[in-house]
Image 1 (cartoon, rainbow, N blue to C red):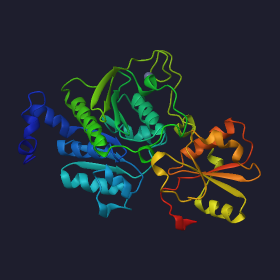
Image 2 (cartoon, rainbow, N blue to C red; image 1 turned 90 degrees about the vertical axis):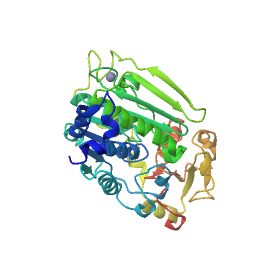
Image 3 (cartoon, protein in one colour; image 1 turned 120 degrees about the vertical axis):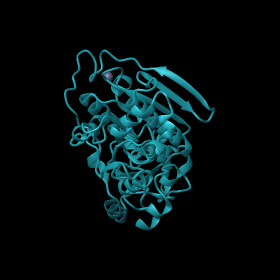
Image 4 (cartoon, protein in one colour; image 1 turned 60 degrees about the vertical axis):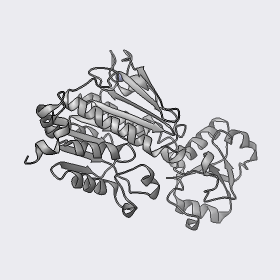
Length: 365
Ligand SMILES: [Zn+2]
């Protein structure tokens, strides 16, 4: 408490925050789901602001490609556990804070138990099952969900608070098909954009904690940093929403991987060891599913290479007596490729390389 007034002087000077607001920040608990591109600035600014207890949950390791935007990590952290490094950085910035690090997958089994310990949740995840999970758990616990997403040059942010406005399901009742919305690692994203949007999430969390300002409930801000334009949309509560509508059908947390069809092709996913065995049989055809920028960066440069959109036009090129193994960088678009080809009536056996090629090298095969 010794340097409380000095350290937080710039907040205390603000009439809308003042000493009372800064004490509320010190007494508050915020959970950050995901400590990647968005989670990094959220964690740093909330720590700098003096949030008394910060919970962080993630179960990934630091990859060299993360450093383009995930400012919690340094070159020396590559290969290390994200959550431990994140905890260390937050404590270095503000040793007085309590940091609770959950090195586990956020799932329907632990979500409510964890979320109930916090006043505000910041969804800094990068996938649809987690977004629905955070939304539903927050609605059940009566806690606001500060949500955001980034894609290429575009970012979106809103607060879903089922008590006061729309929830994520009012906005997106049905998840998109797996593989149709690429992740940042697949489609690319401007690193500094994650800084802008993550900082806004931190800002909204501090507004909710202190009661200052007008929170982004029922509104969505859309950022286009390519043209540097900002649009605001209203998100109305959907009276037919399965979670927060007049007759909700959802009474408890569900299986979100299943809801987002993540498990539909689980039996068709193979590991790199299984792929190696299949290569040795000589009875497979490998198909690279790529985005625009990836064509020079392939583990199987001589294999058939196509975008997911062009795949259907290659249908007749495949030999149905040979098994197809689809490979892509992260292992999502390859699942979507199986789904598309199956829907088109293709009868041959198909597999997808689990987890993609991102952590493999040409020497793995
Ligand atoms: Zn809703």
